[in-house]
Length: 296
Image (cartoon, rainbow, N blue to C red):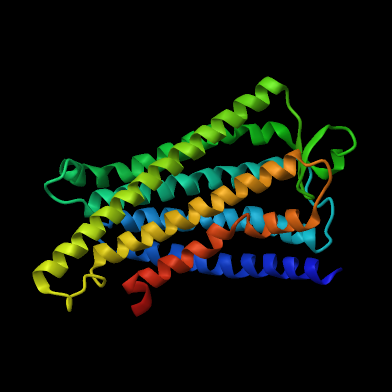
């Protein structure tokens, strides 16, 4: 095993171990906060949901990759491969939905009381759980194609391959089916990415306006950085920025891998390492930006 490949393999293994521990810790922490509260915070519900999704992504995407890069072969049959990839893709779709929900919720929360969003502040918390349930249903329907077009590596000689994940294979579909799947996934991703980007941009404007007002009233010696809503908004903006950057990288890399004639081990390894980087990095952003976590 070459030094570069060994480095990638170690990076994947560390991401799985650390990512699983941190996400499970976050899930238990927010679950305890929610259960101890008579009226749970909407942001805590969303963050607990995101921690659960990140845990699923790390386990369903990370463990098979780790087993594959460390030499295990044919450890998944077709049925297990379909179920595993289906769970991963549903969780990936839920990650973008939850991040979008968090950004929209925080944008409405910090909006001025005189804005057009004032009426939505009281109604939005009641929509958190229904939206999460709807996002599960939506992504389970959109990603049902994984149950059709995925197969185990044992069938690699009898199918026409589109992408080889080492532990699972993506087989070809008809042009009409492939186009329909690509359009549905692209529409879902671009819609939520655009929505969370707009919400984050609005939060940046509100925070800049608030900062100028605070400086004007209290002078340059006063800072609003420690205010809970400001810290929460900065956390959401950081999460959205991270997701958008990683999503763009993943879309470009996957397109190159599918359309390139040869195979690039460096490109494939980097794609595998960064494939669940959001689920690995985002918990640390939550911990750093949550005062309760630091006190704990």
